[in-house]
Structure formats: structure tokens, C-alpha cells
Image 1 (cartoon, rainbow, N blue to C red):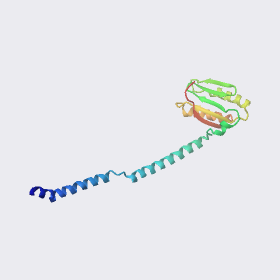
Image 2: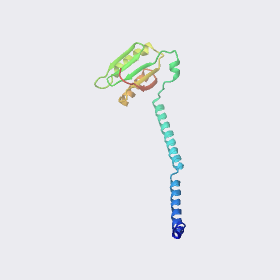
Image 3: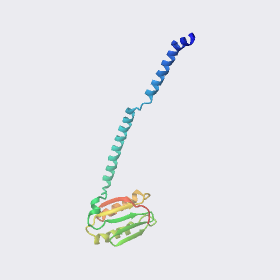
Image 4: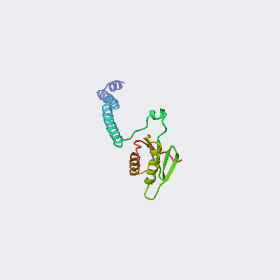
Length: 167
């Protein structure tokens, strides 16, 4: 019994107990979240988003695109001319109905499109709004050529969008 009483309060046992408590306290401190690192990451993300947003806005301005607005929907003006660039053809939807211009070996038939736009210009002299819709895999050069042709025929307000699935 004397031995048990002596070993219960031994300095070795107390030292072990103190080391165990120190280890537990150290582990609890390490489990805390480091908020400073998270704030740094978010600051970098905000900077990246601001820069990429301004670059995207500059690109849209360089193309001189007029994106559709809610005022266009609410007005009583006739609907704008819609031109869809599909893989197999150009679809021109105007007041005379849907006109299909098949794709030729060299690409889109821009001469036939120019004639169709000239006829539309004669029937709609004040119309300047056009919606240009393209499928995702249409070449950028084809889109630019069609936009240049539209601007040459004074359809200068061009809204660019996705053509969606073929109907």
C-alpha cells in the first residue's frame, strides 16, 4: 500500500501527465482554421474576376455589339431581322418569311446573302437591328464576314447569340 501511495504521486507520472496535456493542447491549436490564408486567396480571386471582366467588356466593345435589351421586347416596332449561321446553311428570317441559303463548297454563299439583304433594305429602309445567331462550332472568320456584310447593308445594330439546336 505504501508503494501504491508513493507511485500515485510520483514525479515521473506527473511529468507524463503534463506532457500528455501539452500534446492535447497543441493538437487543439493546430485544428483552428487559418483565416488569413483564405482572405489572401479570395483577394486574388476578386482581382482575377475584375480583370477578366474588364477584358471581356473591352472585347465586346471592340466588336461594337449591341446586346439585346428588355426595351426591344417591350416596343411595338417590328421584330429585327434574324440571321442564323448553321453548319449546313444560312437561315434568314425576315418579314417575307424564312429564307434558306445553302452552304457551298467555298463556305457560305455571301453573294446570295448580299442580294437578299439588299432586297430587305429596299423593303425595310429604317430597319437597323439584326440578331446574328451562330452554332458553337462556326468559324470566327465566317461570323466576322457576315457581320461586315450586315454593316455594309446598313444593318449596323447587331446582337450576337447562340443558334441553339437545329429545328
